[in-house]
Image (cartoon, rainbow, N blue to C red; front, top):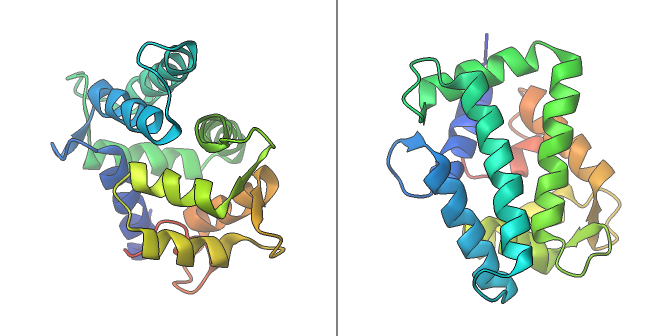
Length: 181
């Protein structure tokens, strides 16, 4: 059973994915995200980078839909989303596989300089795509940059994301990831 804080954090994540504010997540939301990423990164329409990213997000969507869309309407409601995450969080091997894939996708999309890390500007760009204000993004980055080197490695991100999913501490690292809740 998800705790109140887990539910709030996962609801926030749901609203980030629901970029068209329809109350449900669908493929169109991921297409909008890719378009916004392309704008932030300065990619030309129909470039190979956009097409590759569209394929990756579409694959991610197909997986989410297949796992969570219980009424088969090709959309994922908040209840379906929370049930999906509850099942993932109760299966450590599945959690590692799912979250590992998601983190790779995030780094593929937002590691603009290709150095294998996310810097503060890339983090701000990442959260801006999902309608999070710069002030919150900067504050979050300062909290989740565990070694304070100005970069978030995939290992750091995985640790913070684990705390985001599992911790019930409102002052824990994961509580800063996509705040406010």
